[in-house]
Image 1 (tube, helix red, strand yellow):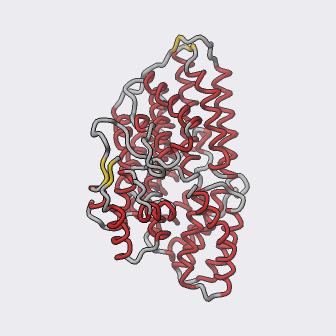
Image 2 (cartoon, one colour):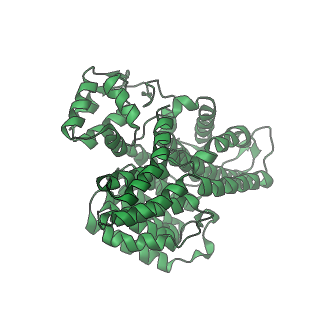
Image 3 (cartoon, rainbow, N blue to C red):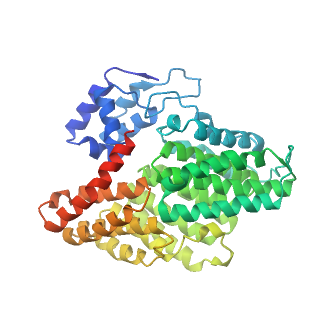
Length: 459
C-alpha cells in the first residue's frame, strides 16, 4: 500500500474544518478514535476502504481515497486497516466458481482466522464487495449436488452434530454477545468441521453437510460483526452464502443476504443496504418463506432511513408489516426463531430514530421490549438504548438517562461492540444535557464501559 505523505495533514484539516472530534468521526466511520489519531499523528497507512469511508464522512470528494493506492494493481491484496500489513484474506471475498473451490476458500478462511487473528482483526469493510456475491446467488444454478471421495466417512450424525453445536453457540451469542463465542466457534470450524468437508460423502449427505456448515459460518460472521470485526465478518458472510448455494439451501441464502443488508445499514452504506435487502426479498420469494420477505422489507426500510428517504422507508415498512401478517410460521427454519413482532417493532424504531422521528420511534421502541429478554439479552440492551434515543429526540433527556442506566447495566453482561456503540451514541446525544442530575448519573455509569471499549479497540 502506498499512501501520499499529505494524507495525514489533509485528514486533520478536513476534520477540523467540520469541527469534528476524533471520537465523533470514529463513530461515523466505525473506527476507534485511537486509530484515527494514529492516521493523523503517526502516519499510519489506512486501507482503501477506510479512506473511502473518511471521504464520505468528510465530504472530501474522493481526495483522501486518491492518496491511497495498492502496491500492485493486479496483486489481489491490500493493506489491513489496523496495522498496515498485507491482508491475506482478500481472496475470500470472492464467490467461488464451483463448490469445491468454495470449500477450499472457507477452510482457508477458518485456518487464517485461527492462526493469524491479529492480522485479520482490522481488515477493511466495503459494502460494495457484497454486490458481486449477491448477484452470483441470484443468477447461479443452485443444483451442484456436492459429493466427495475423501478418506473419512461422513454421515447424518456428523451433520446433526454440526447443527446442534451451532444451535448452542447461537443461544450463547444472543445471551452474551458475539465476542463471547467468536473465537471458540472459529476453532470448532477449523478443528472439527474442516475435516468433515474434506471427507467422503454422497450428494445427499453433502448437501445437508454444506447447509449445516453454511449456517455455522454465517453465525461466525454475525459474531464477528457483533464484535466489531466488520471486514472479517464480511468474508464469513460471503463464504456462508457460497456454501448455502452449493447446498441448495434457498431460505438460508436469503437470510444471509438479509444479514449482509443489516451490516451495510449499520455501517451507513444506505444504497448497498437497500440493494442487498431487495436481493434477500427475491431470494425469500423463491424459497417461499414469507417471514424472510418481511425481514427483507424492514431491512430495506432501514437502508432508506439511513439514507434519509422517509417516503421509501414508509413504503417498505408497510410491505414488511403486511408480509408478516400473512406469513405462515409453521414451516420456518429453526434459526428464524428470533424474528417476531418485537423484533419487527425494534426495526421500525431504528428506522424512525434514523430519520429523527423520536415521536414515532417511541411507541415501537416500547413495544420492542415485549420480548424474551433472558434468551435475547443482547437484543434487549439494543432496544433499551433505542428507547432512550427516542426519548432524547422527543426532548425528554431525564427519561432518556433513566432508561440509559438500564441499557448500561445490560451492556455490562455482554461482550458486544455494537452494544457499546449504541451506548456511546446515547451518551453523545445526552452530552448537551450534562447539567441535569440524572444525565450526570448515566454518564458516570457509562464512562468506564466506554473507556474500556476504547482501550480494547486500540490494542
